[in-house]
Length: 445
Ligand code: NDP
Ligand code: 2IT
Image (cartoon, rainbow, N blue to C red):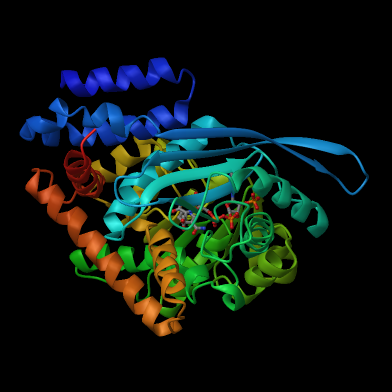
């Protein structure tokens, strides 16, 4: 890195958090993008903005004991990283997955600062989670875990302090159990979580928001290439919340989704994925994607989810998890004629993959811009909760669509202003950073 201040900041992060590779990866990418900004605006170094923005304001680590259906005591680890509150209450999802550790939650919390800034709404950045894996657990086990998790978390959050939401392994069921426990302990009914059920303060279109938003963002990238989704072939990894609603929007715009996956493998259906079957398998029955190939004759199941990128497509939407698409997969996508990649997941493309996309002039929408529709709609849910009103689906969807267009334009313009036209990685990092850094200057230290 050829800027001393940036290099020193990165070194401090690595020394302070040894072995936290995902966190190092996310910080490295952002700081590299920011070099021209730091050189043009000396006041950021004078005010220590980079040291401050890379160190979480608060980190809460706690034990989550619960009792399984056999009466056995289980112990998981819970955490909430409150990263930056310059722009508003901490805001960001909660992830339940066996891989969760402090590196993953820190990388997600760090990304969230810039993502939330890009939405134009008043939200700081944070993230939480646990190494609890809801897969294969009964509803009662999930409820007891969520209650224990919230018994500790409720001391640290609040509608004007920190507002968690869903992420991998946390959907409407988990949010409901956590909301119920928060209300029971704190004796307040307010919008302390987003992604709630519609009958108790949830927003219409929040379920669809991340997937729809990713497709709205990608559509803007395609417009810049003088094309659109009509008649395109699309590959989408994952088959969870983000993937399902990305697929739904893609199909409504006249494109064909030919492959989807889960951590076990992927299904290829040349006739186009039948989304009602995927929705039933994943949202209702909580089964594996392999079952799709048993129900649909035209489909073929392949074990190894990483090979999904070998399927030729015009547009790729990685919507599963971090580092699921590496340099080799990116090269295959490029060779097969892919013209656009928009990240529904957080950091799904490795640094090597991002380089391949940028070098090949494939339009590339980084997660913190392309998947910001979820948290943006969470921001709209908070606004509705404050007003004690509910907006219609079309109202929320229209606002979401406009926010995604604005984010695309901000990233595109910042990339242009800092002499890397078309590089939305730099553009998103710079546009997101400038707003937070300006506010941090105004608020003092
Ligand atoms: P879900 O839990 O609903 O779905 C996750 C999907 O990704 C599942 O199909 C899951 O398969 C797959 N997956 C998880 N881990 C792995 C892995 N290690 N390898 C391969 N596949 C994996 O989560 P979401 O759809 O909500 O989240 C998906 C991504 O989108 C995450 O990166 C999340 O951070 C990001 N995101 C989510 C937002 C939201 O509003 N929900 C907002 C913005 C970003 P399996 O069932 O086999 O585990
Ligand atoms: O990564 C993300 O932006 C989310 N999981 C959604 C966060 C939110 O607060 O809605």
